[in-house]
Amino acid sequence: MTQFAVSNNELLIGGIPLSRLAQRIGGTPFYAYDRQLLTQRVAELRRDMPPELKIHYAMKANPMPAVAQHMASIVDGFDLASAGEMKVALDTTMSAEHISMAGPGKRPDELRQAVAAGITINAESFHELDTLARIAGQIGITPRVALRINPAFELKASGMKMGGGAKQFGIDEELIPEALLHIKTRGFDFQGFHIYSGSQNLKAESIIEAQQKSLQLALQLADACPGPIRKLNIGGGYGIPYFPGETRLDTRQVGNALAVAMASFKTAQADTEIVIELGRYLVGEAGIYVAKVIDKKVSRGQIFLMVDGGLHHHLAASGNFGQVIRKNYPVAIGTNMAGEELENVNIVGPLCTPLDSLADKMRLPKVEIGDLVVVYQSGAYGYTASPSKFLSQPEAAEVLI
Ligand SMILES: *Cc1c(COP(=O)(O)O)cnc(C)c1O
Image 1 (cartoon, rainbow, N blue to C red):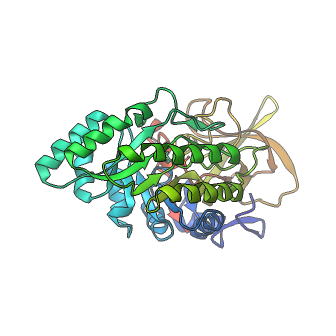
Image 2 (image 1 turned 90 degrees about the vertical axis):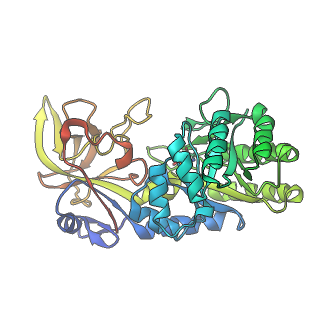
């Protein structure tokens, strides 16, 4: 993990030594996100992607309001998954016309708020289209609607598959012509399509294949549309490396192939805005989670470091958020970065369950009580993806530096 600098044996976040930052915050545990790393990531991605491609931020990865506001200034749009996220999004400088909402089981009250806000709703069922028609009649506003398609294909080699086969997401590809008819008869403002096939993918070939298939699918459906395809969201799925042996996604390879596919798409549909939506790829590597060592003991030959944070703040690092076999997230001793004396340690939290582990048998610089443990790759699916009420422990702070 080289994106954070080290000085005087301490990790720096936005130029601030970690222990100084902990004093400024008033304690541990906390999440810290680095604004400059966010900006850098988006700039690097734009360099690799076709220039006319729109990059949206999938806010569920990290909905901290300050992060959302920063992202609003560097991406082209937001994709939301709830009315709660919509509030955060609309409080930023991002305009409603660049915001869309997806997700299965949107409640009528959420849909009403979304219609009133003027954001695009990625409809995912026939019942949702019925509800939107009722809302339109009640409040007299024409809904902006795109259809989320559950494609027949899958995103291969994905950490999480969200399309292909039987899924709760989207409307099956075979039923899309019928759904388009509903949109036409109801006079909705048709926006286009949303095709999201999966998440956390490090294989360029798989992403390229899914992007090409998404563009083809939209072209096949073009004739059945009630109007031009204004927006085509071809999903994302760009992953980040979490574990030893994982190699970075080759975004240049993805971008080159996408440029070719988009050029061919544009010969048939010149005015379509093509969008990708990314969460963890934009924010995941820009964040760390920090907890303090409050006890150290040896049990039958193994060293245990007890820290003041754990799975209640960072479920994913404990290995309980979708991992099949627990693997250690990258961890460092932020207050002893250059320590040469190493020891094998287990880092555990205060919860009364063996699941509350942040590191299993990791070789790290020697730790004293009071040292600060850092978990990298924590900018996405950290705090808001964790059961923070479990065992009534204190909350974690979140800061954007
Ligand atoms: C979760 C989600 C994303 C973001 O996924 P990442 O793996 O964080 O990039 C994007 N779009 C939709 C529809 C999602 O549900």
